[in-house]
Length: 265
Ligand SMILES: [Zn+2]
Image (cartoon, rainbow, N blue to C red; front, side):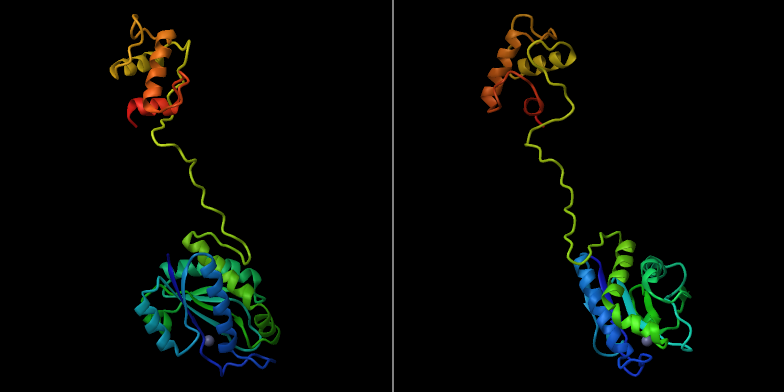
């Protein structure tokens, strides 16, 4: 089970345009929504919705996270908007997670100038031992985007979760859904063998010969003609005796269960 460490912003001073909320408040809520979604999809999650980024990186490293994920909202000039994801470089695991997350997240966020960049100097990318996918959901200094962010925290969490599921090849389970049961193979009673033809009264050929040979070898003679490849009355009688002795259905028909017993599989 993969361990995902969530490290939401601890920047209450970054206020949202036109609203009485801030980056810390919104990002911690998004992280909690994301944690719920990830747990539902089978991930192990630590949600660092406390402390400073230094505390969180330390905790992520000590926990030996498989993925470190800072969650922020952005600010620039009050006009630019879009989803921005950052990784150590443009080749590693962090980048590949960014690619998987960008599509579902960018689909729902209002901004259109979305991209993934390498930012090896950023503390949480540099200091986290786990590959890092650093998320800037969209720009909170654009009033309508800020409003959208506060109204879509659960959807943002679900979209990021879908991306993480996609990267790890895990099944995404939406809220209120049950995971599809893992298909289990048809149970086979012990001692059954597949792929051998059914031999019964009147059967002729190699399978009948093999069955006669096996019965004779076990001490159930098949009549005076022995291994003749014709499964007649004496052979059926021999088979029924064998089936009775082994607790099989006494029908004189060699199906998977009888073959399995005879061949010791
Ligand atoms: Zn931030």
